[in-house]
Length: 531
Image 1 (cartoon, rainbow, N blue to C red):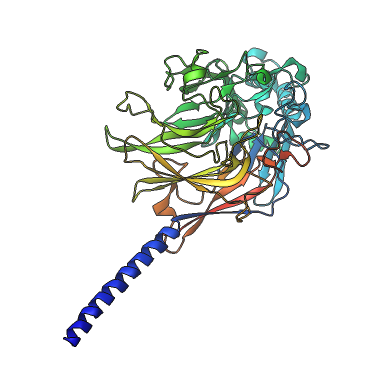
Image 2 (image 1 turned 30 degrees about the vertical axis):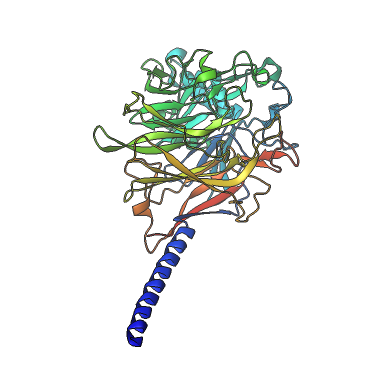
């Protein structure tokens, strides 16, 4: 009997120990995150200080093309956040803070390998035109057409917060914000209506003082205009030769009054561009039907009721599985953004997913995720990384820094600047589409618990590492299965550059101990713990 009791006790003990081991293993697995984000500042010091700028990279990724945006002038740190309580025609945006230099920067060598002021850029084209114009009628001369296009649209190279997207060797830039007249700010500010297509390689060559062939000159810049496509604070995407203007806002000329002239886009606008046959520097633009929850997003009333009424939020490349043909297709994920109607300076915390090729059960080309709640973290434009795991069909996205510290803000301020991050997961098989956020509420830029100043990421840019493998469904989304392995659990996903450096949570303006344009560069790595 004693032996039997010992046997029974032994069995129970073994079961208990096994159960305890399993519980410990499960607990450990839950504690260790699947993906770990690490950010480290590089030793680079010679990049220009820029925020809200236009950007592209050379085809080999070794050089960055940087222009427009705002910078710090020699005698003032005036390139930070604009003075929220100032006069927009005077103290909010100072004339000297607008960057008028086109830079080519080499991050590997930490050197500016070429620079050209806007005035010199026009002079180079003018001098080239003067050397070959004899005997050719001006109106039909390609260089004359280019010269006039640059002169008439010089704000492309000097505005702030334009919408930007690079596709191969071409950079598309749309809208942006700035003065009606850069020589006299008292004439008011405006949101521009131009769409530009720039040959990146040719402009880099020109800035580096290299000679262009005749064909390279004629393919340097093309510009079109359309009054439907007026935006700042939105994003631009390209799917199958169709461009998508995603949200944003037109300030009009009365930004400080929050009254006449202002208008949110309240929509995503698909459009196409084509070369004009008569003028080599002109783009033809065709705007298609908007994707919106409002039948007429151009109406004034739409600003008070549309869930698309937002700007300056993180807008990310995304994927979804189209149930009509079971194919994985590109989409756009809109997370949070500012400003909610009736609540000045208050952020949205929900999400919208735009799927242009799929009409859902609500007969819409978008899905509104009202249950998503980002809890006021990282609600403003900031660097992002998106990964796709083909084994699980999950997207994993990271929002890094910017504005939105999870707290309420003092009256007249945005939510505080932050060094936190948000990790977002989405099962692309699940319909309706939904995302789940996870807040990494610590200082991701310093790898310390306290989320303290200085703060980085707002209006900064992520230059991707093109040496890793990207998804066959989108060249903006990292392929998890092909990028990570048992021998390579950590990968460099790219570099964060520029943006606003804030010296306190709610600076409210630019200047010493408040905020400035940054020239810092940060290396971004992601470790996958489960392989």
